[in-house]
Image: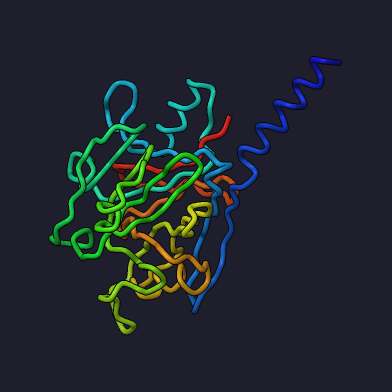
Length: 244
């Protein structure tokens, strides 16, 4: 009887760890999106870059294989930030509390350098998107962090460079968070969208005051809840939810 109670307790504990993760498909102003909502206090959020041998992981299946060897499983994943040709992070990157790449605060070429950009910070039981200058001022404690750009939503306002009549459309992905860090929503467009449309999804539908763009050329999603394991080229940083 005691063993049965222990097994039941462990089972309930595992269910609690993964119960908050929810993925669904939604529509907004004629566009289709897949979103995955995470409660960082319940779901184990991590970032992944290299495997035990030091080689870049690059694929969702490689992350799954590495976790399986540790008795863990990948429940959700998404590419999480821009990277160089060798797939090293373009901007700030922290994994397991160790800084792998410094913060890049200056403007530069491409979407990453379209300031303001931002940093996705995973703390203990929290996850927050910070505008980069705010991050440097606050210096939050991050177990994991990845820098990307541009910001999509900054304190409830769309990025000032986004144009309603833009013709630049791509499959895009990113993340938005609540101010208290208790809610994070990852989104990927299922058709090509503009920055303005993508930002409005986070601001107007998901009601998230801060959101960060991850990428628009290699946007990919692993979400078994909705039957997604997107194929494609090798990636740099990957964010995921880990379960037992």
